[in-house]
Image (tube, rainbow, N blue to C red; front, side):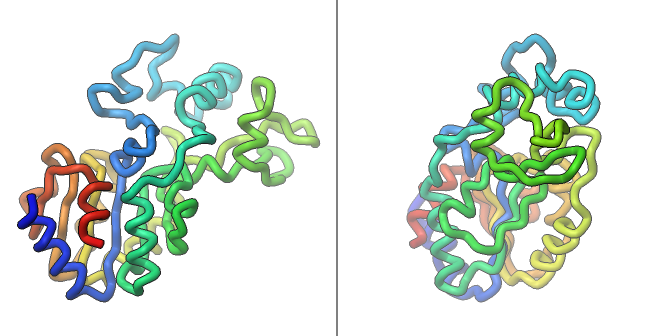
Length: 239
């Protein structure tokens, strides 16, 4: 394993515009479950299928059951940034990393100190009233009894992209712009099976594509370097 990490370190040292694209595997090392792995949320038994619960229709038709699942399995107020988050923030401070593009909604990149974070699927840290658009914190939602309600009486919705909702076009376009300008793209903790996020790799025009994931991905054949290891271990080692 030393050789791949040494190669990655050389690539990082030679690069000036690195973009990191990450998925759920980045946060599992902080104790946040993913969806598709053997122990993921999709492979557990609930009253309703998890993929149905986190849909727009379910939220509006059954907010009570949505929030039971959301508070129990999605909203995590105790998770802390892990070695991967901290290493990426350090690379940004060193002037190497220009942006983190993430599919995660937990806010751990910002908690670690990253400044330029493009959240494709939104964030549990932002919440708003559907009626008056007043903003609320994640803690307010966590502390609410049942469905969180605004002072105006409207239902509060997490600012996350649910099934049946589209990605924010501004965030998506900005992510593409950073990826197009990158000289090194590091992909970590993602199976690269969920579109449109996975298709962002098609916009990379730089010299080296690195994929760090515990299992194989569809992008491996296009990568300059593939490391099947813990993302936190690898990123921490190159520092």
